[in-house]
Structures are given as structure tokens and as C-alpha cells.
Length: 249
Image 1 (cartoon, one colour):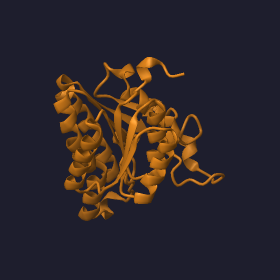
Image 2 (cartoon, helix red, strand yellow):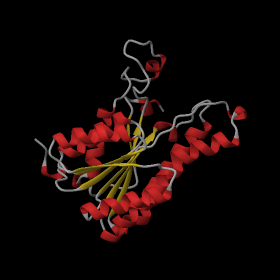
Image 3 (tube, helix red, strand yellow):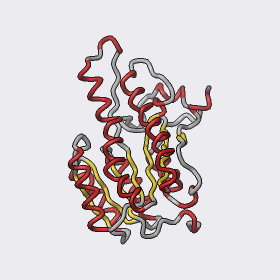
């Protein structure tokens, strides 16, 4: 049973990102709560696979392959969604290019590539979709970020800077659009299972109080909460799902 405040029946949710496991988990979670789903990302086969699972639930779904470095493609995506559904209620941004390298060895090109993927893409997507939310006087933007945006990591200067930028974008945009009834929040993730094989020795677990990495399914309930009216008085914050990492101080 889903409480009425958590239902998003008929809402139109754009789930955007590059990782197929994230796209699928978040799309299914919001679809179960009643949303019509738009899945957007660079991998045509991956987004269509996620879309097919949503179709099995009976929800309306649209899959749109796109390049997050292209403002034109993002603008076209938003216009396509508006043409088909007439509104956009929810945007989930989950682009995440992980990159680690000693600072003095990093090239300017590498620095620019990480910020392009992990910060500027959030700017472009929020602008392309957000203008429709501002016009309709309602909307929720949820940015999926790394805890590295709040904590420094050795060899992670570019990644930490980009994630920190997304957190500040979240806070500043929440203030700017609060009177337009557009809420902007972020979900901060800890170390996730991506790229870790089952049974593989994982030294990172020593730093996680709960002694396991997170999964997209751990993030999905919080995303649903922030997308629903249950969080109608919440904007401009980062909520961490990290197994207790940020509590270390």
C-alpha cells in the first residue's frame, strides 16, 4: 500500500542518466507510484530495455536517446515530452562520470571533460526542462550526486569539484525557483555496487559502517519521496543514502 501523499498518479517523470541499472530502478519505482515515465540517456538499447519493463506495468513510457553534451538535444527532448504529455512534473538527473587521477598529472582536457559530464550536463538538463516547470508553476528536480561533493577524496579533485558544483547548483536553483513552486533537491549516494563483482574482496567496506555498498534500489524510495507531495515543504537540501559514511564526521 502506498500512502496518498506518496502517489504520483498521472505525473510525468523524466529519468535521465547513463547507467542502465539506475535508469531501470528509478523508472520502475516511480512507475509503481503511478507516474508516466520518460527515460533519456545515451544508450539506445539500455533505455529501451528499461522502457519495456515499465510498459509491463501498464504505464505510459517514452524512451529518448540523447547526448547530454548537446543543449539542442536536451531542448528537443523537453519539447517532445511536452508535445506528447502536455506537462513535465519530475526530472531526475543522474549523470555520473567517475574519474580519479593525481592532481599534478591531470590535464586541462581531463578536467574539462569531467566537469562537462558531471556538472554542465546537470545545468543543461535543468535549464531545458526547468523552463517548462517554471511556466506551469510546478515541478520537482532531483539531482543524484556523490558524497564526494561534500567530502574530499585523494586523486579526486575534478570529480569532487564537479559533484560539489551540482550540490551548489541544487541549493541556489532551489532558492531561485521556490516562488515558482519548483522544488530542487539532491540525493547524495555513498559507495555503490557498480563495477564490483559478487564475492570480490572490497577494501572500501572498511569505511562503510553498514559494511555493504549501496544499490539503486536503496536510492529509489527517497527519490520517490522527493518526487511526491509528501515532501511539498522541502527544497534546497542534499539527503544522503550512504550506509552511515557521512556520520563519521
